Length: 201
Image (cartoon, rainbow, N blue to C red):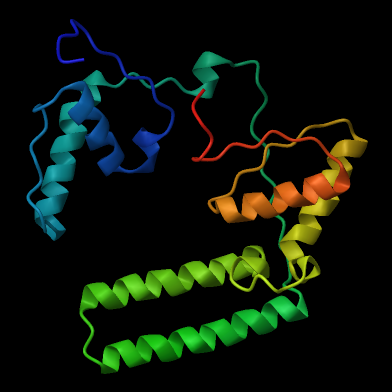
């Protein structure tokens, strides 16, 4: 790679994801072009580095939108479905939330550092999000019927099959995808499964 005469980088999301992603790509594409950000840089100083990043990378970015590439495609249709938690799911959420608050209070009372408190808070919030997806992610002994999102997924799946459609399902939690895969296997529905553990070949 260092001996390459020219370098191009094709990507779909880092321009929208975060400036850190964009910075990492440019470190690969044009090593040394961007200033290194000193560790612990925050606030106005960090904003200065981020603004420099935007200014220095903009001339090298060719961004093509869907309208420019395929104007014949229809506009994206988004539908938000709200799922009321099941009674078991709501009870587990309430218990976990109370336990989380007690653990965080104990950490704070014990003089934990701000970083440790922040990490513990994010971890507890992650668990609460998982309970909202499927209680089995934090309480494996829970029943599949305790997940309102799984019930909604089953309905959407049945509609898609009846209409002859296929579905593409994303989740931040690979453990949730594993539960959905088991659900499809149980229904005898074939699927393709991909996560970070899937070999490249």
